[in-house]
Amino acid sequence: MAWVNDHFHPIALRMPMPVESVMTGETLVAVEGLSRRHGQTQAVDAVSFTLKRGQILGFLGLNGAGKSTTMRLLAGVLAPDAGRILINGTDLLDQPRQAKQAIGYLPEQPPLYRELTVDEQLRYSAGLHGLDRAASHRSVARAKIRCGLANVGRRLIGNLSKGYRQRVGIAQALLHDPPVLILDEPTVGLDPIQTREMRALVRELGQERGVILSTHLLPEVQATCSHVQIMRSGRLVFAGALAELRQQRQSACLRIGLNAPPPVADLARLPAVTQIENLGGGQFRLHHAAGAAPTQTLLDQARANGWELWELTPERASLEQIFVELTLGRETAE
Amino acid sequence: MIRVIAARELRGLFLSPLAWTLLAVNEALLAWVFIILVNDFQNTRGRLAALEHAPGVTDLVVAPLLRVAAWGVLLLTPVLTMRLFSEERRAGTIDLLLSAPVSASQIVLGKYLGVLAFLLSAVALMALMPLALMAGATLDGGRVLAGLLGLGLLAASCAAAGLYLSSLTAQPIVAATATFGLLLAFWIVDLGAAQGTASALFGYLSLPRHSDALLLGLVRSEDVAYYLLFSVAFLGLTIRRLDNLRLRG
Image (cartoon, rainbow over all chains, first blue to last red; front, top):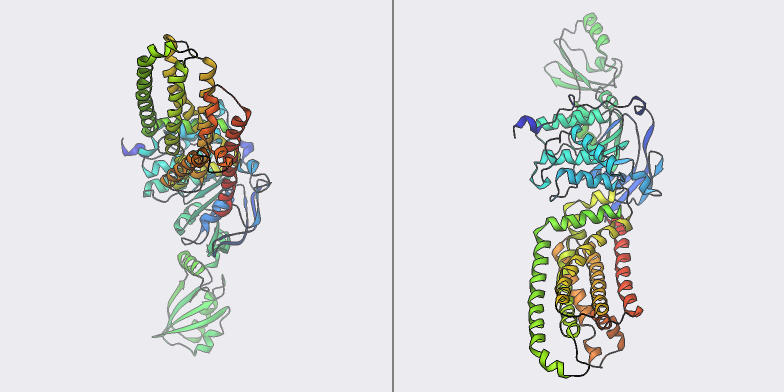
């Protein structure tokens, strides 16, 4: 098979969605005080968050941070030790069957039977979710087109590449048209082009649904998600819109070079400056509060006092740095 | 839901060479036993004709064949049931069942009925051999049916035990070994009772002993109840186990 066929084309094959189904803002998932132990370790520790329609929430964390366990709890595969999970207004623990009908779940390992063909697998999954024969036929055809599986319906899953299996897994999660999608590391093991297409598909799916995906890759979150939650040893250490995380990285510093530097105390009087490092050779690093770089005042004072400014570089902690700091548990900026 | 799960289970069995091999081996060995039994019957027929209440073909061919077929069930079941849950746990496909809007009892019943359908089809295939005798001999239809009912109930009990043990481990071969051990224990538990050295309870617990009366054409509610209770108990244990799996992870 030509490799072109090996990739799907979400834009060309985008399905027209009924307008009334696109409602943003409605809360789809509400989690309160979720906890779960694995033997001695607290895998998930009092995690609370909400997911609204139209949001793509990225769970970010190192391996073993509790992302997969949280996902398994949300999908009803594991029972929590404490806490409440509301899916689309239904309690997952009290009414599991009704709540699970609203969830599409793709575990880390796509749950596929190697001995079945793609069509058989999808029809089985549709049946499990209570779709009758006609509805199953329609939704299997739709999911196959959406995930670029139209040509492989009769192939055995055992003979498919990792990328295809991942797509069958996603198609399977979409069959019953759930408002909530839970995808555990959806792009692991995909090649760069497949990864890009998977991200495009997830973004598209997130327009009319609520999507939760987990990853340990920051670029994945930047490319796909509207919201991000960072987990470290079972706890949420950051939760908010991606834009807020970006804002956090503005709390950074200015690197300046002066030919005739004043005493450090003069620099420290600049507005919003919290700390000064003397780098030698007339260079300083001015740490300042978030979003309040004292650039203009510095320029004015340098000209007025003849400090002879020759370098002015805003230094920002990259998103990567913030991620590493949050996940490893160090406080912000050195 | 139960039907969907059972259908996939049955389909999965027939898609694997294992199930076909089991059917073929079972059928071939029983056919060999059947030929020997028919041959013996042919050889002794002249002498039997002289007796008053002489045992007929049902006594001398069908009943012994069904007795041997019970051993076939003992050997067949562990290999058939070992993958039911352990393979799903190993491959992670159990997540699909656990995250789908189905209850633990639906999952367990679906899997059970799927594997039971396979076992019963093996029994039906075997039953064709004695039924073929109808072409040339008169069979006691009632006794044959009662004997087949006994074999079916025995298969249902073995399958339930195998299903439970398969849910205890993620290693199919461990499940098979444990199932075989457990069933064999229920098979030979009455050895002492037969010699009159042990309590009658052991005799009552024996799995194959309860089909003895059925082989004589005697359908006793006591025997049927034993098999049904045996099956229901293990199915109940499996449902509990599946719920525990969610809690323990």
